[in-house]
Length: 175
Image 1 (tube, helix red, strand yellow):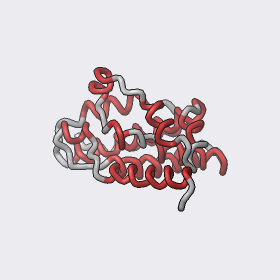
Image 2 (cartoon, rainbow, N blue to C red; image 1 turned 120 degrees about the vertical axis):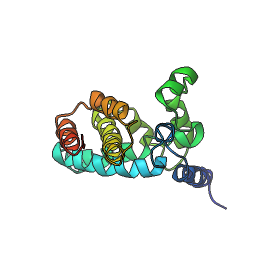
Image 3 (cartoon, helix red, strand yellow; image 1 turned 45 degrees about the horizontal axis):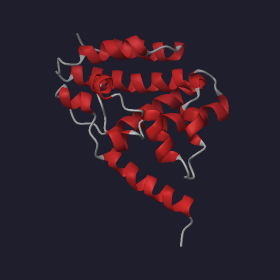
């Protein structure tokens, strides 16, 4: 019989599977091609790896950033993918949900990463850059609802490396 921690970890893994089928609400509302939260997480993780290398973070910092980005939307398995407007109305306590999900599992030490402000800027940049790249792709495919996503992403990217990648993304935007 597995111990309690292993059992809770196993159920966390099962719960996280829902992210593969959970559509990103903003894209649905904008009539963009479907993308799951898990697909977004993959893109954000790849971008985080690039940002970590561009910033010269080194092994430990790179690993910490990747783990943070990997888990950044885990709470959505329970509360769904909410738009900024929905979050303002519902005011979900994402950090509490993350603590509940990761606590008493083999990943409970990752809770501290999710609260690490030093990693927050690059993690947010990876998240926003993934949105920007997808919005540019959708815009170039003819979706005229993408300007607000492009503007929102650009307004939130803070790091020098993130801004450099964002500039390159804009160069790919067809007028």
